[in-house]
Structures are given as structure tokens and as C-alpha cells.
Amino acid sequence: MTRFDTITTQLAAQAIELPSWAFGNSGTRFKVFSTPGTPRTIQEKIADAAQVNEYTGLAPKVALHIPWDKVDDYAALRDYAGERGLALGTVNSNTFQDDAYKFGSLTHTDAAVRQKAIDHHFECIDIMHATGSADLKIWLADGTNYPGQGDIRGRQDRLAASLGAIYARLGDSQRLVLEYKFFEPAFYHTDVPDWGTSYAQVAALGDKALVCLDTGHHAPGTNIEFIVAQLLRLGKLGSFDFNSRFYADDDLIVGAADPFQLFRILYEVIRGDGFGPDSTVAFMLDQCHNVEDKIPGQIRSVLNVQEMTARALLIDREALTAAQESGDVLGANGLLMDAFYTDVRGDLAAWRESRGLAADPMVAYAASGYQQQVAADRVGGTQAGWGA
Ligand code: PSV
Ligand code: MN
Ligand code: MN
Image (cartoon, rainbow, N blue to C red):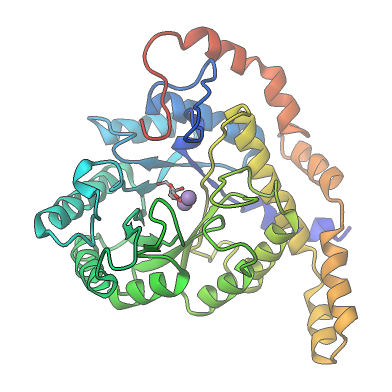
């Protein structure tokens, strides 16, 4: 038995949730480039997500964004996904595109605006009952641009009250995950800027409220794996939004910018029991494919997570603990680096084949002709896009 053989059972349990919006067109504030075959409906986004799962066996869930993915019949949408081997995952709320939210949503000084935002979350919870989704994800664009513009403390109090109303509406098996982000679209302060604020807010709500960690939402140089370790220690890490970044919230393919950081994060996830059958941590992607094709972009993303998970699982933890406890600084570091530098691509390819999957999902997808087929089929209508 090779060392790789010892981790395959754990690898087989890996499940990554895809964001519906990754399949739509997206871009920067300068230009959105459109791609032939881009989905026009949530059904077409789900069909594309099913391709990612078919070739990788890694992506059995799709997250929705409301109202972008609004439909009349969510139970029917659940069945549609089920027929393609997928479940509907996290429901993402959206309180950042209505004029009413110019100065905030759940934090707004006007009770009527706050209620509008709360009602939107009630609608999301109703949708979750129909789709079978477990998690309501809240990312707020609330914040201010100028010192003095808002009462940052009063806004925290109003946020707490609004979240309390939403939390009270959750079903027994539903959870609320609160995502933080240190800037953008507000540039002076955001109302949930960091894990500490998210933690303080969700801790006040109760057990069904947890933190969502988006890897692109930290200041450059932040030690994200430390935050992962701390949140797992506190039992408050609900979910990840994985992506990668060079500068800000770039939403690039996970593992593309800094594979070593992804490895270090996944090691702390494993170390903190955030991975495996008993873990309740949701692994989600939050990415946009502006210039690359979207389905292969998502395939590459889940494969990157799998590859770094495999390397992190290969760390000899017993030896590492011994080195740490004996003060062997370089030995301990060497053990971590040995695992990081292990090339698992050949083993993963062979293992995939042994499970009836393509050795190289990127190649198999490209050869399938799906891309050409949807480009020919999906003519007319309006292509979906981030913010559509
Ligand atoms: C905006 O920063 C954002 O990327 C958040 O990370 C959300 O998770 C995502 O949009 C979808 O609302
Ligand atoms: Mn996110
Ligand atoms: Mn983001």
C-alpha cells in the first residue's frame, strides 16, 4: 500500500459546491466579455454545473443567488437538478442591487428599508424549504465611504437586530452563514469587515449561525489559515468561498494565484476536523470567469482543491507533532514542505480512472463536444451574467 492509497477514502468523500453565477458572463467595471453558449437560465447553469460533476465526481451541489436565479417553482428546480445528479446548495441573498439599499440594507437607519431587506431573507428561507438547501448565506454590501458618513456603532446594533429577525425564521435544520469582507463596494468601512465582527454577530444569534470565510476578502498578507484554525476551534466555521487573488477580491480560479496558501488552509481544515464525513463545513467556490471558458474554469478549480487536499492529507502528522514538540523548527517545516512538494497528479489520475472517471477531466470535457453543442443550441434570449 502506497502512502497515497491511505488517503483515497478521505478524498472520495470530498464535495465542493459550485456557484451558479460562475457559469454566467462576468467581467470588470470596464467590460463584460460574452461567451457563446453562456446559460440564459438557471436550468442551463445547472446543466453546465452537472458537466463539472460528471468529469470530476467532485461537485454535487450548486449554490443559488436570489433574485438572479429566481424561478416560479423551486421544487421543480430541485427535481431538475436531481435528474442531473445535483442537489441545490446554499442560497445567497442579494441586498446590493436595489436603489433602496444605497445607504445600507440590514443596517439602514430607515426601518422600512431594513424590513425590506429582512423580508428578502424571509423569501430566501422559503426558497430553501422548497429546494432542500441547508444554508442561507448573507454577504452585505453595507458600509460607508467617508469618515462621519454613518454611525458605525449604531449600524452594528441595527445589524444585530435585523440578523436576529432573520435567524428566528430559520428552520431546525437550516443555518445562516455570515460572510465578511474588508472593503468594496464601500471603501471607508464595511459593516462586516472581518472574521471577528462576523463571529461576534453570529455568536450572539446562536448555534445555527456561523461564519463564512471567503478567501479573497482579506487584506494582503493576512494569515488566513490562522483564521481557519481559530474558527474551527470555536466551532464557528460554517463555510468557505474559495477563490484566489493577486490584489483585491479578484475571484480568480482557486489555487491559481497561491497554491501554497490553499495547501496551508486545507491543512488547518483537516487538522481542525473541518474535512470528512462528520464535518459540517461547506466547501463552496465563489469565482467569476471573465476571460476563460466557464465550465473548464470550474473543472480546474475543483481539481485544484482536490490536489491541494491530497497533498495536505499526506502530511505526516505524527512526525510533525513530534518535531514541533521537540523544538525541531526545520524538521517540522521540512515535513510540511515535503507534503506540499509531493506531485500527486499521477496518483490522482490513476485513482480517478479506477473509479470510472476520466484520468484528465479537462481533456475529457474538451473532447466531449459539449461546449460546441451549447454554443450552437443556446442562441436567442439573454445570456445570464453576474448581476443579471
Ligand atoms: C462580493 O464580494 C461577492 O463576491 C461576495 O463574496 C459574495 O459571496 C458574492 O459576491 C456573491 O454575492
Ligand atoms: Mn464570497
Ligand atoms: Mn467577493
